[in-house]
Image 1 (cartoon, helix red, strand yellow):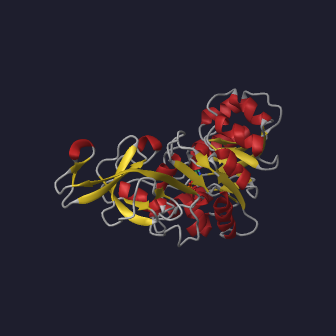
Image 2: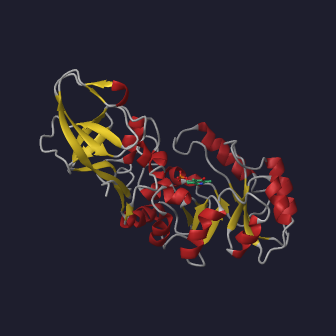
Image 3: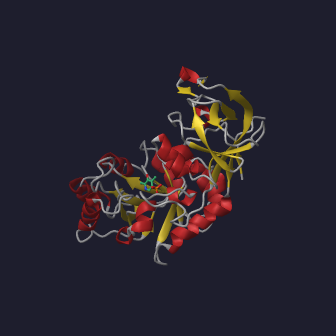
Length: 358
Ligand SMILES: *Cc1c(COP(=O)(O)O)cnc(C)c1O
């Protein structure tokens, strides 16, 4: 068996959820965001480990199905993008999902349905991110159409922050204002604005339902603050082994494109992990890799199934030596920074061919 696997620490997931809970006033409710297969961690295991969540948030009916099967009946499940076709409301009602409405068309579809039970609706305001959401004028119109409609149980208000990871960013204030502007005009049962970063650093954004995602998985949602500083514990450790070790002469090139040259004689370890496993293809030479608990540097290009690491300073490294690509001992945020990407991407892109061990 190829030695790569993702070790998933479910106790760490529960711990991070506890951190989220303690950052909020006791009356706040939390949707644990488990979209994209729980950011690559495996949605079934994540839902089972998050018994304390008040609800879960996903992107589609397909993602909601395993959550509904495992969650307590009283745990809400929120469809973050709402439905994609009119008839999806029938399934949403059967599973008692909470649905986002981010476009007037979704409201029209809802008013055209006869549902087994009315749905909790979250009107999504475009408060300044300009990606999804109703303009204030559209929101006024959709609110008037849905208020009192037989298909609707609760009417709630939701929006999403573009720059919550940068505490002083001026867009945060502007988005908060746009959100609060809605409140004197209309009556909403519940309000939701905060993602992980806002949960941890912007208490004015908490409202009453929060939507933490990344922080639950132990990566930092905040620029300039490490996961460790925030009290978060890594949930996924991507591990593999050394497949081969070789000595190369000064001037030898390593890997595709011969893009890296040894300046002096070097010892190179080849690891069973590549971009087809979810390792970032653009990780440059110097990206840290943990070998036998010690830091070493990636050299040469990342291939589909293999990477190469300079272990000249680690004489004990041999075939079978354990490797951590990121995780408990090497923060995923650090690898992401080297590779010019985000921990969100690294975690969620670990491919299905990498087995998860819980
Ligand atoms: C993914 C997502 C979240 C979670 O964001 P994190 O930064 O991972 O905490 C919250 N709200 C919406 C609408 C999302 O799409």
